[in-house]
Length: 398
Image 1 (cartoon, helix red, strand yellow):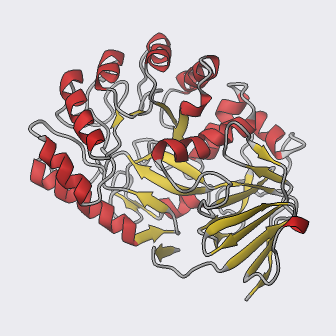
Image 2 (cartoon, rainbow, N blue to C red; image 1 turned 90 degrees about the vertical axis):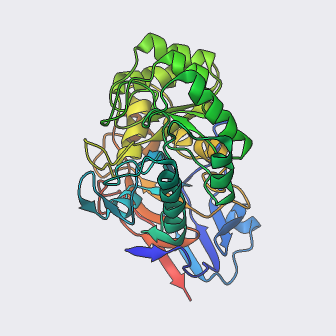
């Protein structure tokens, strides 16, 4: 299923009988509520059913005591055009990832485009084209924030101004192009920031031909907004240097599926020890040589919770509210005025965990029973996760 961004409004949606409501807010990860009311794609009410206006909904969903959480956000993907990845010559990867609970993806550069232009006019044209294309087209309903140019030597401040005025709000991973030095990168990061463009820097060893090692000193000097795949993509810096980055930088700590798992755990634990868990965000760094990971974000949540010994409700915040706040997105949190992007989950059938959170902390990924984007149901029982023990049902729709 691939839908245009101009799909109809949701009308009034009532979600009742919620068993566990995860907020996405790391300071208050679980809400004492059993009902959500949505109007035209935005949350308008959260609380107890008796206290909310639930009359005459256009769509009524019985959550059947399952968990409702904000839709997951993949902070690091490499899309190209539509729902196709030339890196793996695979169709439908974004829709497949939506079946893993992801409702928003953020591009770290359209770097896998065959013949990707590296001249300044060409790279700007590609960024603007990608931004426009994914703004107009949502595979599976997923919001793909794309158009992330890979900066090259010779760019000047007016290039960043032009990109920003054209609607580009992201830079691709610094280090995948010809700009690899900390001083030069820092200048361009400042230009980008002045024009409202958020930056991400590659961290660790090279990932594709043309990229190179970006060490801790370059990361610190460049001072990009996001320390991209701090656990390597794929090859990581040493644990000592990663922990030093967590301590010496105040920027976002991005942990990805396609990186070093040992260092992923170390980085998350370092953030907790430094009392800055709000800085941790999650991505997959796919598509890549290791393929497409439709369940990559859920797998990262289970990994960090089980082997990192971090409460599952906090790790879900890494993949939702933390990313939304750092990326300035109107989703990722269950609060009034935010987009009605939800994933309905329950413990997988036959997991050893007695509850969803316990099963995740034991290392099992949950089953997804439904995904909703802008108040519209995009899939029912996931075709990719293990089957959920219980799933929500649409009990009424006009």
